Image (cartoon, rainbow, N blue to C red; front, side, top):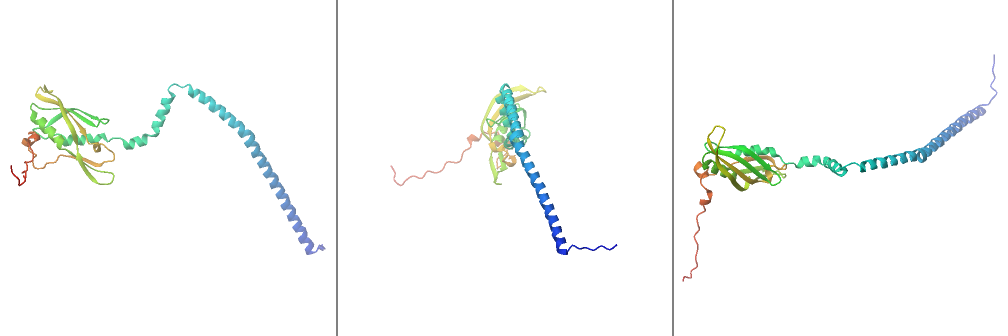
Length: 245
């Protein structure tokens, strides 16, 4: 069979272009109608369904608010919740009370003037350490214990990485001094010592904290047992004027 194409090439290209144009127009119409449908759905959702949901949420909020207002001690509960948010801040500023063991280890004198601690209280609010203890049945050990605490130094590194040194104790007082018997029946001297401790001792800002007892020249028992108030610097000569009486 022999087929003869009587359509010119120009006509064939025109038909092809018309076919492509028809497909493009049809696709554009479909996309446009779909876009209008989507926009219409979103408008209906926002202005109808969303408004209904907002009204329901407002009603639920009002209902729950009414229920909460009837809860006893609601203000205290909210205060506790607010405090829970500040736990990290409180934890960063809390005192490091465990350093008290380093203090006790440093200030207990060696034999024969050692003392035993029966009760130890750290009052962080007042900044006072109170020690209830006992020693051999004489005041020598108590005197040594007092002077050891008075001479103790707190060494630390501050926030600027500078090494510092401060006195451990100030405003020391001794009370409740009396004799008693320990568990073995031996006679002991009981006492209570209180002093204001350096705030740097338990501060979290202080790093590398240590407690040391200086031994400058006079570290003997005889020195520790003698009141320091009887020792003074020698008096200086007074230079008088040339005019005499």
